[in-house]
Every structure is written in C-alpha cells, then in structure tokens.
Image (cartoon, rainbow, N blue to C red; front, side, top):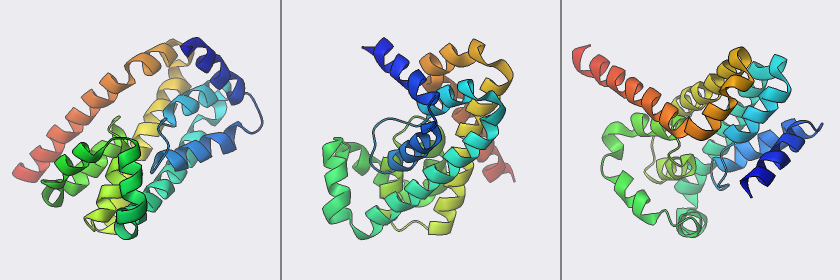
Length: 193
C-alpha cells in the first residue's frame, strides 16, 4: 500500500500539473486536508532540484494563505465550520488542551504548529478562535512554515537522494529536535535578554 502511494507521488511529481497540485495541498492542509505538503515537496524537489527554493517559496506562501483562511474559520465560523472540522479529525481534546496557555505563549505555539508535525490546521483554527493578533499569527506562520519548507529544500538541494529516505522516515524526529533547539533559544532570549 505505502509503496503504491510512494510510486503515485513520484509519478505526479514529474507531471506538468505537479506545482499546482503541491500548492493546492499546501493551501488545503493548513485548515482541512490531512496530508502535509512536505511529502509532495520532497518529490518535486527531487524531480526538479534546480527549482528547490522556488518550490519552497511557493509552498510557504500558499501554506500561510491557507493558515490565514483557517484563522478566519476559527474567528468567524468556529461554531459551524470549525467545530465540524475538529469533530471530523477527532481533535476536540487537543483543541481544549491548547486553550489554557495560548494567550501567554501563542507565538511559540503557532511556531510549533508551523514547523513540527503538530497539526497546523488545529493551530490556525484555534488562533482565530482565541482572536490572536492576525499580524503576529501571519508573521510567525510565515517564519515557521518557511523554515520547515526551506529546510527540506536545502537538504534535498545539497544532498539529494541520500537524504530522501531519512526525511520521509524521520521527519517528525528531525523537526522535533530542531524545534526544541528553537524553544531553548526562545526562552534564553526571553529570560536573559
């Protein structure tokens, strides 16, 4: 099953509609779609290594645009549309768990959702629900999503196929370690600066 999906993604990455497909996935994943765009980005960069940073740029812009739509869903349509999305993906418990510390550490939570495998759609909807500052949300989303996609593009640009398997199998671990490093730096700057 996984091998068939893998082969299908490789086939799509070589088609002329691959970029629009990636951008649609990046946009939809930010508020409703369950599959992260990283998988498609990896194969697209492998198929077109000379366009790695171009692809990461577009992926970032469309992902943040989808995140802003998720923000507005949480802000204006939570009772109808937002709650339905959370129910569909069974994310209500996670949603409530985030609510307690969100006001104090909202930027850090958005950064975590944008960079790590924490469901970004949960973060976007909840940020709108708690009325986090839209500019702050957008900036942190752009930085964290950009860091994630440019990390993938950079690694694949320089190391190509050698790192493909590592990124696919260990992306959660790699992104979590990098995010923990960023959290430590954040708290050092916040409390010592």
